[in-house]
Length: 393
Image (cartoon, rainbow, N blue to C red):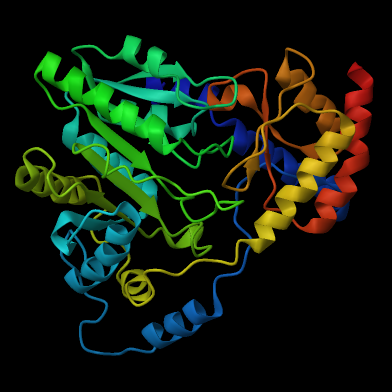
């Protein structure tokens, strides 16, 4: 067999999200798209701001010589400086364009961060529920994932995190607002986490990093805010993308920023730039760099997602599902009414409703609904959610 054993294993246990997405395509072909209620994939459908559309058109018309040439591996400095002002406001810590680099989406940013800090066998704590590809990213660079569960409402369990930290721990990877549950880790919890990691770093005489994956930072509800990571912990790295901020997932544009006082900053930034090249992410797309650099603070109108959150919560509540109302993102993570959530997801599928089993996010017994779907889809799914619940009641 020409395929590696590891990749055969990964393929066998491949993403439940993709499995359900592909099943959705099959069902739509069989029953018609209007008769299938697809909540399987988090493909943002709020339109990009009209101002961004205008900027993108202007950028595309620029025919300056070498405008499409290579940039530095860190990205255009003027773009980084513009985005650094946005990061400084969000983090309440002054960040410059030299503290960051442009990346090939958040996935590219996470991979270069892990490539830069991990030695073989180093451990990275991942909080369940988590985005499925985190485990693969860590494995890509010789690390070992250590999964720690959050509490019943998906908040940080600091005791569990503390118990997992040891002399092999190199980082903790957090995602807030969280995919799949929509939880935002509180400012007090993040401060406590910073203190815990500082004590552990001193005990084990090595830096333990926080890597914060923040693509949903601007999709928050009810006046909630995502707390600053840089304010509470010096050895922290922020990675994000414009996939959700501006509804540009297919354009693969993001950035990474390090705390301005992070340990060994110059060597770290040099290594990050090198990782950007040797992993094949050399040059975040130049045209998209210029577009987001001209509109660094932009965001979609999240009122669309706010309304859809209310709609899906009403549907689930009326049908008797147990769930924690999401504070951000466009996901909700209800508890399965039966222990085997894969079986229940199949029951929903019989109702032509596509969701994703919680074990795909490291948390069996739950299932994910991506409510970035048309209002009519949410409304029409109501009867199916009710029928599936009635079957197990």
